[in-house]
Image 1 (cartoon, helix red, strand yellow):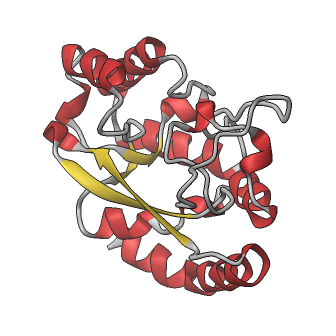
Image 2: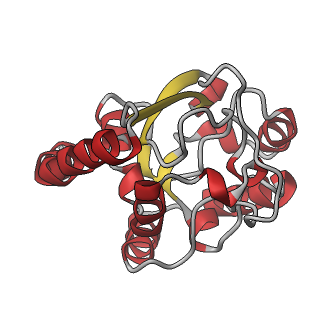
Length: 189
C-alpha cells in the first residue's frame, strides 16, 4: 500500500524525467534488466535510463563515466532513476530495503550470496550496502554486508536506511572515471 501511495505521489516527477530523457537524450526512458530476486528467481528490474544509448548492459562499475547521459548524472545523484522500481515493489519482486538485486550472470556475487543465505529475502530499492557505499565491484564484501543486514533486519533499521538514502548518504554503483575506456555495444543497444 505504501508503494502505491509513493508511486502515485511521485508520478509527476517520474513523467517529467521520462519526457526529459526522451527530449534531451533521445532514447527510451525506461531501462529494464533481468536481475536475481528472492530464492534466486529472475525478474525484470525497471529504472530510468542514466546511460547513453548504446552502452553495454554490464555492471555499472565496468562502465566509463562518459557513458552517463546528460540527464543521467542528475538522476543518479538524486536517486530519481530508482523511481520505476516502485513498480517492482508493488508487484512483489522487491521491497523498499534489502540487498541490491544482482545481475543474473554475476556468478561470483550469486555464489557468495547463496553461501550466506542472502537470497532468503527480497532485494530492495535501497539497502545498507548502498548507504555504506559498497557496490557490485566487490562481490564478497557486498554479500557479507547483505548477510549482516539479515541479522539486523527490522522496521526501525529499515526506516533509518530509507532516511539515510533520502538524505543522500551512500551512493549507487561506482562508475569509472572519464579516463577509462568507453564500453559501447556495437549494435547500438
